[in-house]
Amino acid sequence: GKINLQLGSTSFSSCTDCEAGRYRAESMNPGEECAICPWGSISKTGANSCLICYSGKWAGGDLSTDHVSCTECIEGKYNQFSGSNSIDSCLDCNKGKYSGVSGLNISKGCIDCNVGKYNDQLGSINIFACKNCPVGKFRQTVGGIGLDDCLPCSAGRFSLEGSDSCIICVSGKYAAFSESNECIECEAGKYTN
Image (tube, rainbow, N blue to C red; front, side, top):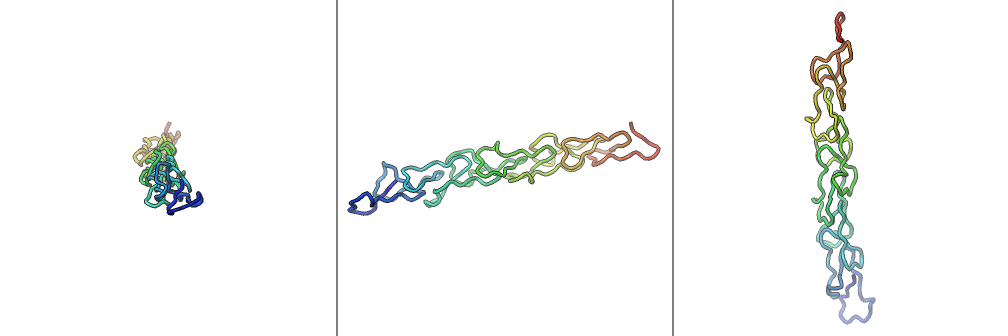
C-alpha cells in the first residue's frame, strides 16, 4: 500500500501511501507507481489490494478517481453481479414493474404494478408509471405490461378506470355492449330481471 519513488531514501517516512483508487500488493515493485484498481473494483488510501464492487453497484474508468467508490445503479435499474465495470451493467426493470430504489441488486426488487394497472415502459422509477386500465376494462393480476393486458368487460357488466374486475348491472339496468363504463337504466315501461 506504499511506494517510494526517491533514490537513496533513508527512512520509512519516505514511503508514501498509494492514493485512493490505486494499490500496491507485496508482490509489486515498491519503486514504481501504484497501479490503478481494475475496473469493477475500488480502494482506499494506502491499499494493498482492491475491493470488488457489490452487486447493484459498478466502478470503471481510466483514472484513479474512477475507483474510489462504487456507483449505485440508478432507480429503475438493477445489477445482480459483483465486480461490474460500467453503468451498462445496470439493467432496466421490466415492463409491468418499477423501482424507486438505487443500488438494487436483484430483479425481484422491481415492484409489480397493482391489479387494474399496467406499465409499458422499461426502467420505471415510481408507481406513477403504472397506468390505469381504461373504463370498460379490467386487470385481475399484478404486473401488466401493456394496454392489451387489460381485458374488456362483457355485455351486462361495466368497470371504472383502474378496475380489477367488472361489476354486474343490477336489476333494472343494462349494458348492451362490451367495454361499458356504466349500466343504463331501463326506459319507463320496461324492466330487466
